Image (cartoon, rainbow, N blue to C red; front, side, top):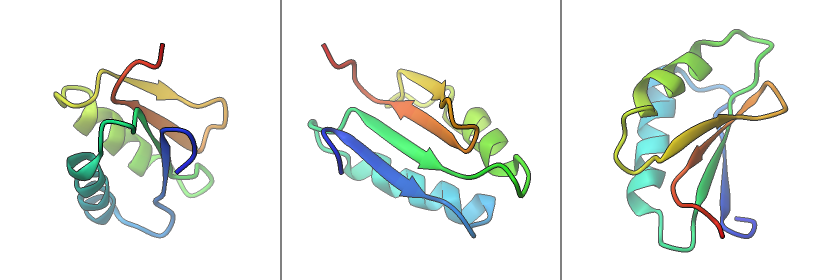
Length: 82
């Protein structure tokens, strides 16, 4: 964890494993966590990225999804940091 950002490395996981891992971290996220940074990579395809966008765009705990400047990361924003 780094200042309210939790990084989850999804390399080597299939979509089911990644979703299960992300769901467990979303469920256990405390109030000091405002962003989950999902590191999925992009050289091996975009299936994890597409699963993240489709699955979490309507999740009540996620206020928005941000695609990182690095193509291999996607952020789930849980709270605004003011």
